Amino acid sequence: MPSSSSLPHREIAALYTDHHGWLQGWLRRRLNHAGDAADLAQDTFVRLLTAPAAPAEAPLREPRAYLATVARRLLLNHLRRQSLEQAYLQALAALPAPQAPSPEQQLAILQALQEIDAMLDGLPPKVRTVFILSQVEGLTYAAIAEELGMGLRSVKRYMAQAMAECILLAP
Image 1: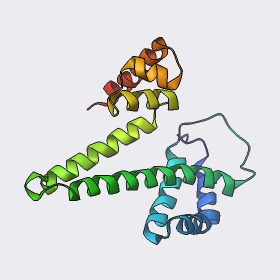
Image 2 (image 1 turned 90 degrees about the vertical axis):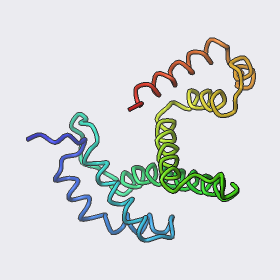
Image 3 (image 1 turned 30 degrees about the vertical axis):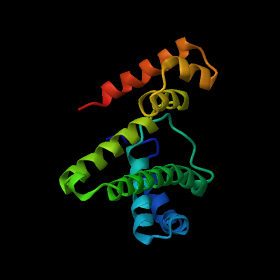
């Protein structure tokens, strides 16, 4: 049965055997947390296994650089999610007790924030910036166009692209 990944399973297995310990150490030095490093190392190899198929490529010349690139993207996502969660928890702590959401509501809100963050991460940078300025900052399209130095038509096109993505990702 053909592999669905861009690297053959046997090459990923060899990468895992040869470099998993190194990758986990590399991540541990950046995170100062062995558990998170282990999780991200595993996620890196899962990402390789589930990557879309690509044309046959030559064997990797720099496997550690390749693994570090994949892991770095996962690490940035992990750190962004942590930052988002910390900001949410700080906002909750500032609320008077009667106004604080229940633990179930807190979890649902945090999950929704993480889904929105993941969706925004998938957008091209200009589209993401326009979407955030409009939906989070509350700027008008004209104000966004002026702030970013682009035409109103571009702002509308980027917002349409962001909204289409939101609709596609909605449950």
